[in-house]
Structure formats: structure tokens, C-alpha cells
Image 1 (cartoon, rainbow, N blue to C red):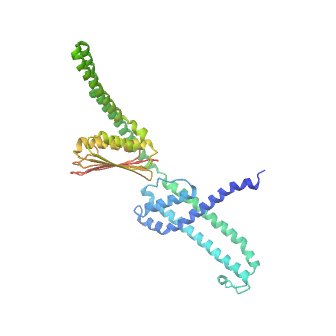
Image 2: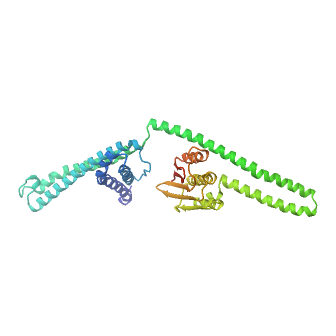
Image 3: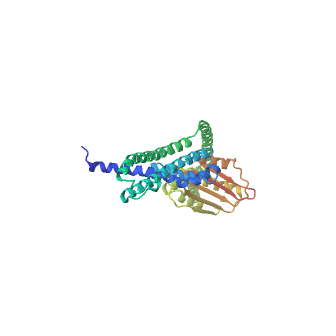
Length: 377
């Protein structure tokens, strides 16, 4: 048999959840003026801030995070329904306040024998018996009012979910976009494989052939020529190791996995002859896939700037905020970069694969700014 002491710990979270739900729903009336204004101006300001406040309030009610707002075309409908529900909440709170005022006046009149101005009741007309007759209906009405607040809290969550859920047309567009992105990613992977094959064939393989020729000459040479040829072979071996490290680094730098994005970008800066200035937010990034995408965006953008922009310096900025990782690469080159070209299209595919956004600004005469915004969480 469960004792009262055992039941008490279970009742406290229920009471806390109910109070949090009622308080969170009632607090929505604070945003009512801004919500009514947002109905007119949506999707422009202050609609985004109203949506953020609504998401934060719903999260306080049920503890579920809501990071993805509804699409812009649905903003006005969601805000309009939210304003309507907040008006209903305001009416309920006014009724509760009126009931409290009436109840207090009746208690005071019953205790002091004074009048009740709201009822035009003369002194002595309101007794404790009169108060007793109003207690039960008053408690029933209070219960119904609080139940109404709870129902509105449930409605607000269902409305958010309904407006956040994509329609059939949006799902079809998303499927098409994903198919396109997949094709672009496959093309980018194939291009990367071809580049690695060229690096190995034109670099490492040629050096290995030269090394084998040198060793064959050492076998046929005398003692005097052998020492010089061995030194040359040793130097050639060092070049092979350097080329292999370059190929491995461009494929996937081990430092990125081990030490994180900031350290990998510092190593990238040290490997580039052109001056590269880093401004990296030191906030930890838990999403390794987002880090990897950000690194290769920066690496490929730097490579493009060195090859095509005729730049004298490059700036790389990394910021992390609100579940988004933003990488900005700016150079002082001649500009005129083609966003659909081979280099930038590869960057765009990599960002699109992470459901991110790429912005390229490159007017003639420069500067060129490549900004990638990648979700991380």
C-alpha cells in the first residue's frame, strides 16, 4: 500500500508542471501588442522576434525545444491564431480577476457588515450564509477558467506543430532538392577522387619512378658516384614523403578530427604561402560533420583565391551562434568569381549536403566574400 510520504514526491512534479503550463500560457498576453502588430507586418519585423518569443514560451510550457520556425509563407497565419488565443487568455484572466474582486468584497462585507458596491447591497445584507452560497459556483467557475487556460496551452502547441509541418508541395520540392544535392555531392566526390588520382600519378608516382632509376644507377655505379646518388635518392625519398603528406592532408587532415576546427585552420594557414588572417570563435563545436564541412569550405575557398583571385591576403572568420556555424572567407583579389564555376559549385554542394546556405559576393575589382552558414547541433 502506498503511503502519503511515498506519493508526495510524485505529486510535486505534477503540480509544478501544471503551474508552469498555466503560467507560461498566461504570460503570452505580455506579447499581445507585438503579436497584433506582427499580424500586419509579417513576415517582416517584428514577426521573427514574435515567433522566437512564442517558441521560447512553448518550450517553457512543455520543455521541448523548438529551433525550427515555420516557413515564412505560414508566418502570418500562425501569428494570427496565436493572437486570437492570447485574446481568449486575456478574457479568461479578466474573468478570474473579476471573480477575485467580487469574492474579496463579499468576504469583507460578511466580516464587517459593510455594503457591497458591485451588487448595490446595503450594509448587513451580505452574511456568511450568502458567501457560502457563492463558494461552490465560484470554485466551479475557477476550475473551468483554469481548464480553459490548459486547453489553450494544448491548442498553442498543436497549432505550432500544424504550421511547422511541411505541406505536400513543400515535401515535393524538398525531395527534388535532395536529389539534386545528392547528384552534386556524387559529382564532387568523383571530382575529388580524380584529383587525388592525378596527385598520386603526377606527383608521388613520378618521384617513385625517379627513385627506382636512381637506385638502379647506384647498383651499376662505382663507389665514388654511389655516395652522391644515394644522397640524391634520400632527398627524393623525402620529397615522396612530403607529397604523400600533402595528399593525405587534402583528403582529410587528421588534426581536424583530433584537435578541432581552429587547430586545423591554423595548420592550413601555416601551409599557405599567402598571408591568411584567422578570426575563429573558440566556442566548442560538438557536431563533427559540421566542422568537417566548414574546414573544407575554407580550404577550397583559399585554394580558389590563390589560383584565380590574384589576392595578396585572405581573411577567415568562424562564428558559432544559435545552432549555426558560419564560415566567412574574404580576399582582396580582382573579384568576378563565378558562383556556378567548378570551385565554388563544389563548395555549394558540400554546404547543401548539410542543409546549409552559401552566399558568394564577388563584384569586379573585388573583394570576394564567400560565406557558408551550416546548421550544427
